Amino acid sequence: MRILLGRSVAAALAMLACLLFATPPIQAQPTTPVADPDPFYWAPPDLAARANGDVLRTRPVDVSRYGNADGWQVLFRSTNSSGAPIAAATTVMVPRGGVDRPLVSYQAIINSLGTQCGPSHTLFNGQFTEAPALAPLLLRGWAVTIPDHLGPTSAYGAARLGGQIVLDGIRAVKHLPELRLVRSPVGLVGYSGGGMATGWAAALAPTYAPDLPIVGVAQGGVPTNLIEMAAGLGPAPHPLFGLAFAATLGLEREYPNQIMVSPFLTQEGRSLRDQIVNACSQQIIDDGAGHSTGEMTQDPNRVLQPPMRTVFDENSLLTYPGAPTAPVFAWHGAGDQLAPLDSTSATMSRWCASGTRVLFNVLPGDHGPAAIEGIPGVFGYLGDRFGGVPAPSNC
Image (cartoon, rainbow, N blue to C red; front, top):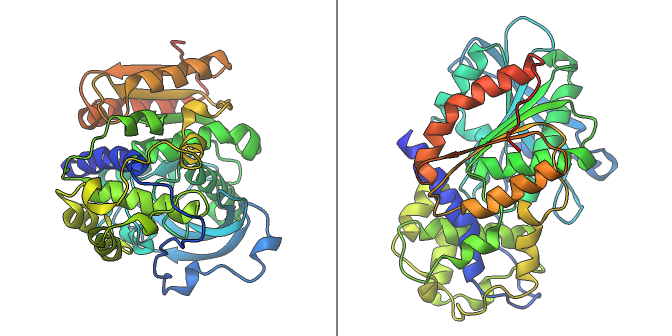
């Protein structure tokens, strides 16, 4: 659990620190990860002709380490931030027996730039740090889908993209009759970086995926205003600087005409970029520890300028005008230094004003401790939604 909390803290920091880099010329090219060698993940040639949520291919996987369940991996069609078609993956675990059991989409915290770092890989090589959360869900008889919500280029930092992938992954899972989930009610869960994908999926669902029967959302420690949090970060060396740098590179991949980093990197910056371009979280943390923006970029003062600011607004729930129609349970640390409470409170207030039934719990402590304190409420909240109990609200 210590590893989980540390990485959730790092996720919030990394998502925002990318603002500390300059906005360079459009002609520069973003870094890209090495393509996954497994052909299962490769997009088919007719991808553009498919609809969002269409199943592209499936395969069975052994998920017995997590419980008495059958497992599948599903490749499906989704859309990136510029509207282009992409192929994305999710891993599904379904307890044996029963039909149309509740389905939970669990958004993990993914702090990586390599495609091999997504849950569809780490669930099976012992590197999935949130594994203890899965068995309790399966023991309740709930099916679980865990999407690779950073997409095929591991676009770390692109929160709206994550929401779209989550929704299309649920569609794909419900399209497969062998999973016996066609009429299942759906719940969404995630904390910190996973909470961003969860919150975006909830907010986008009324317009992007109104066909999905989402009955409840549980999200914690969600950064809702990326610019505000970035403004609080200084140029001093930081033990988690590598994750901040990685988030910048991830957003560059998703928005290559708006966020460009490489032309402004120093020699040290280029060296670190090349070290982590395909790395998972721990290597990114280790290689970047103790560094700062002043070392890595030639112009650290070009901050908050368009078009970079536009990208961050596009990925901040505070500035997105839509709101969920499904009820929401949200929790947040009162002393959260990475995801300021005021912006989250303002977002929840706006959702309330839009008619969303929100139960918003403010807990003592910072980002990490709040994760533990909020977890017990998740199971009961979703259980009541799946059971048809009217959603509480403290709007």
